[in-house]
Image 1 (cartoon, rainbow, N blue to C red):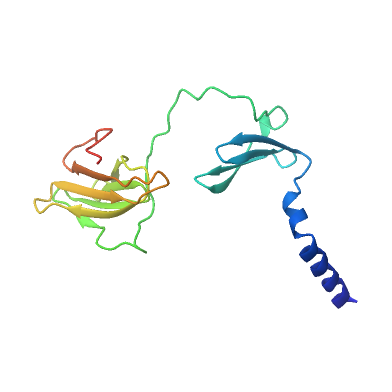
Image 2 (cartoon, one colour):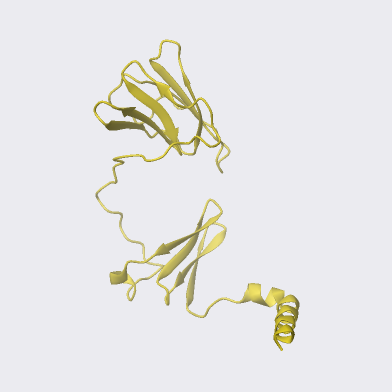
Length: 177
C-alpha cells in the first residue's frame, strides 16, 4: 500500500509539474518591482522581494499586519543607522588580509567594510566606501596608506579605495576609483 501511494504521488508531480509553477496562493498581492514581482502574504505577514536576483523575505511588524498596504509608500525615517561594531573576519577565501599598522591598529575587512581595530582602546574605525565585498587589501611600504579592492557586483563596476590610516574619520568618498 505504501509503495502504491509513493508511486501515485510521483506520477502526479511528474505529469503536472508545469501546473505547480503556475499556482499562487490566493492571499497574495503582487506589485511589479524591477524584473520580478514583490508579493505580500497576508496570512503569514511577509513580503517576498528580490534584491540583486536573490529572494528576500521580510516580516511586517505585528502592529501593522492588518493595515499593511504594499502600494502605500511611506516617508523614510529621519534617523540614520550607525555602524557600531563589526564581527567576523574573512579568512576562508582571502589571504594576506590582516596587517598591523604603526598606529597600533589592526586592519582587515569583512564583507564591504574595512575595519581598523585598536586593541588597546578596544574600539573600531570603519571605512564604508565600498559597495560590494572587499577581496584584497594592500599596505604601502610606509605603512600609512591602505588600498582595498572590491569584487564586481551586479553593476559590473569594480572599485578600489585608497586612504590614509592616520585620518581619524574617513571622508565619505575617499578616493574610490
